Length: 490
Image (cartoon, rainbow, N blue to C red; front, side):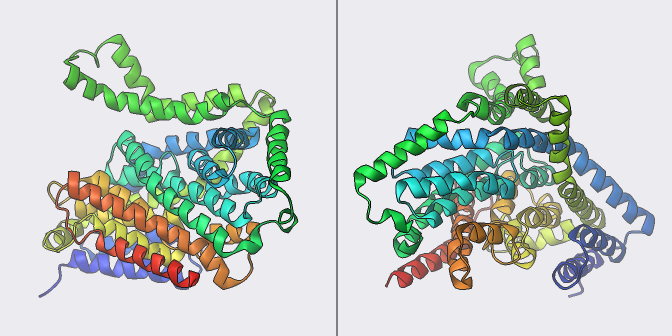
């Protein structure tokens, strides 16, 4: 059977994209634009129509999320420089108590990584893990893996980090819905990493500080108390001030989303048109919500900075997201070309007859791209760009689950081509390659498997066109991770 030219164009474009990223020095941004040109020209579009689709897709994607991403990283820059992350970690450690340090650090990562880039957040918070290791006779590996696990899962799953924002925009999913499901799906994935981090402590006791092995419980308890006292004496922002810029935009966006629900459930038909309703509508708009949180961070956490220093910090934050914005826009351009050529509609007919759910497509693509080039953000944006035009042509597909599947797929097996892999292992002092894979590649794969399984089960229960085969792939990989742990123990 002869394939339509639009499908041939897509296949050639994807092959070229993979080749350029994997085998050449061409940056992923240029590679995605080249792929979009190839898909359009082979798919039957004229040169003008192809360029028009590229510029239109690029502009519409960034038009909806560009400001939000910029505001998010500006807020993160203030949190990063003010000690807010350290304050959150100290308060959670104090709240949970001794022998729960890995849980405290994972929760800290879960919260802090929402506005701060994961690499920077890990470097900022690692001294806390190191101090806790010395004061609590805990393995530095366990504490670092738990902290990095909380950071990386939240970074992949929860807006306003750039990747999930871009995916939500490409799929046309509401930010509040993406935020709510991301917060939910991240929890079991992080719990899986905590379980694995505890196993690492038992299996590699050499990473427990040697000087602690002969100390009594009273001495260790006293050192733990001294750590808390040192943090209490240090000038750090309060927990309320530290967490407010993160919590406020989430609350505002969720309030706006819940307003319609209140109208239908409680019969408040005119709520949205009232002064209160219009205020909630305005403040819950992502651009306004992030603007409020950025101002909150500046005036509560940036008191020690003068005007020039504040502006410098904000501009430093913007500079870190430039390439992310461009790659996200390029993903939107590729998706627009695929829609214009009709490749999405052609493939949708074939996908609908497959024994797996259509939402497995972005999950699998994100997984494969992650293996090829390492960046989680690029992986999920690429998966969304390729799969969204296909899934939008299939009736009754829950695009929220599809978008979250793309973000979860991008968690797979962080290894040598992922910058975080090297940062985590370097901070822990792990140099042996096999141990590096055990310390970081396995836990990210566990998070991928748990998150992917969770999304597939949610789609089975509450979505549409789900299949019992959907969770098989992530569950099989999880089983492999479990067998690996058992075999290593024996």
